[in-house]
Length: 246
Image 1 (tube, rainbow, N blue to C red):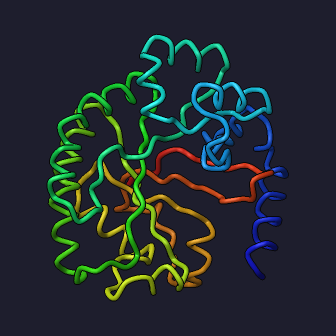
Image 2: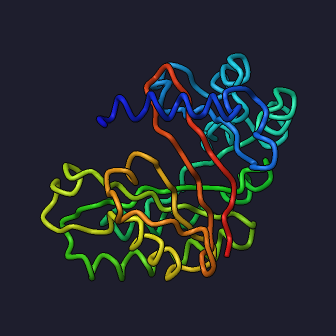
């Protein structure tokens, strides 16, 4: 099965499960959320939110900078009137880059940003973990663990969790000399090391590229958030689920 065939099949399954309308599937907490990257920058916040409601999505990704510019009350009202659920916001601090100064500066505003996200009902954030870098693996692991522990302290004060997204395809792992974490098993372990504010983003395509190495982790001992997504072409939709906790 190639990527195109997989995506077509996944989209059909979503429709069969009743996820193609605005309502969450009964008993699952799942809903289809507009992924703003599909808009390619052509529709900005808050018009992107109105577009999501117009075409029948149950939720929308949160452009945190755009929403904060509009203000807390205006954002709450917009989501309420359009009956949309916030799915997630990108973690607003650059924790995975090599510049320690940029990370420190970003931490100065993180408290207000996380507080705002929580206040509008957005209790999930996510960050992509690089599958390969210029830094040796163990050195980078310790740096990111220290940074995410600091981030987690802020997240926990506002009951917000952050998912780590792993990138499985080989070409991503060949972009730099040192492989980092790209398998789901190891990402789950790393999230647990970083603290209870962290979980794993399950992008179905990145998982399926790993074959049997991609284990199910929603069993005893697991914790954190599990954002299940199905990356699809621009004319399709993205699926998200709620929390999986051990």
